[in-house]
Length: 436
Ligand code: PMP
Image (cartoon, rainbow, N blue to C red; front, side):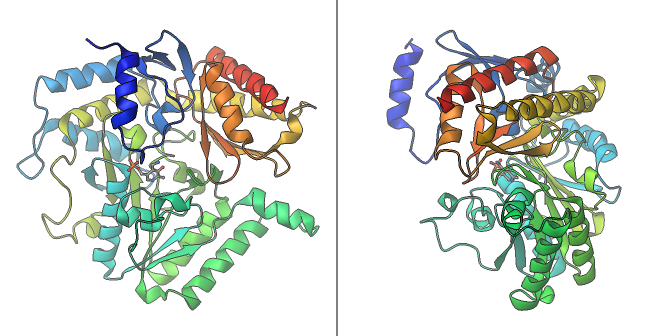
């Protein structure tokens, strides 16, 4: 049997460069909030595999449910018949949907596939074609979803032609808006949302007519675009515009869903009804599962056989997702997100007051345990990657995001008070190291 270090050397030669990697660490196992490397080190995980293993690594209850299902049936293809775990999963999900009209599901394997399905559904059911996306939005890497992704050009550069009929509207990014406004001495709470809504109304007058526009899609908290929550006023304005023009509102909660922001879905905090909700990542704590949910009349406008795929709603992944829903309830996860989210925000705000490193920090924002920290424009270029690498060296896994100098904090939703304090200490230390 080869040593892990030999395998890594082999792997680094044979894995294509299209997959980026923030470290060369080889993992042996994960447990709760921790990842253990093959060379015997342990790391506190503030990445959750990019917002996936929200209930901690290898949660015993989820592992047990998946193991049991492996001995029952692994693949019971959805075009052939039903299997229990998918039926049970819908029973678990229905009561936690952010609006009672969201009652009909489609399960697929990845966030991108789910977004593609949402777009197909919107086009087919409205008989319109165009889609409006947000500046900074991220929806995936397939051709259609890369066509709709606006967080970085790497997702589309060289891969064209992209899907046509995609229009981009500004996202209400309050920190950036206020930076420019502050320079002009004009700052008000609603101004950013009002301006973005104005721009959207213009887009619908100048570029894509409502009669051609099937859907507007957005993440309530911009993810890969910088961890920026949309203001409530904007979301409510968006709903109004969609209602006025019979445009479907698609809420992409691939990253923000399943408790991450302190409510089951972030959109609950906006009092806004989605027409289609997109789910993935946290739904099954690491098993490949994603889905969309919408109103029955919209979902039933589809031709049988036109949606889904071979592995849609895999039985083992669905069994894991059922266990996740139970853990969310039994372990009062949302309460922990609120408490630990407050602790994390207070910790970051305290660091911001430090006279040495504080001035490096421009903005701390987010909801629940989905916080972003953007460095000030005066901070040195590359600061976010330097802090990230220092954190890794000091035993904390953390992610950068967006084209701005930004870090994202997405610890497990099950994290303890002590683990959170420990993570904040490592971050503070790593920030000081980067500043000197
Ligand atoms: N939408 C959002 C908001 C995401 O964050 C992601 C993944 N980062 C996707 C869609 C795409 O999901 P996947 O990588 O599973 O295809």
